[in-house]
Length: 327
Image (cartoon, rainbow, N blue to C red; front, side, top):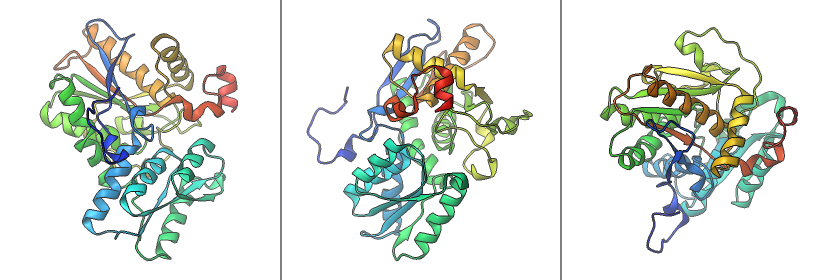
């Protein structure tokens, strides 16, 4: 599917305007609609962020043409930035912990990016440090830092939020989305709540993540298998604005995987674990609305399916649960 009817000059012109498709298992009277972000050219929602980040930093003069964008990332954001770099006269360099998704690193390299690996056991914290160290040694280099940059949420306030609003003619009752950097949910919720203050906003995270603490839940950090969302340290999630969020819903690895398998088998949706978690939470919100347990301005729920399952096949995403967790 495409909304484009005329030839385009650049692949970047195909970023955004992704389809909004009903989750067929949602209640008849309270439809759940999912934004299918795998329709972007780099196959994830992070294409929006990559293009927006590079474009705005160039416009502001933070980096000049020919400079280098260095980002600590485990995958999709790197692909989005690398995609933008091919068309915007900048170089892309990514600092990635070892043993993170081989598919994503391969795609970043294929787009001309340089990959610098750091020890897996030192996590993203060390990757962030190395990115800044490398930027300091280069002329005309920046580290956008998606976890802290207001441009992250702004990208979705400028694109994803308006697309959802327009597609549903403003009849948005609830927004449900996964939180990793939190940029996606904050941008969408910011745009829609400004126009519909009573919209219900649900942040989705894996069991073992810590966003629920912002709503008073007594939860501890534990390992989880769902990728792309969740946090082990709220201090690194500077974009999360709890005032925009009505509730935080935790979803187990097992429930997320069962749902991503169901989405493929019953609805033809090839999505990853973060989408499985989002679908579980969105359907729960819709059920509560249908049962009269949740008051919303419109009986519609919107969620986001950030990327495709293809990027996680080597990790056994469609295997038996125990095998997926072991992988």
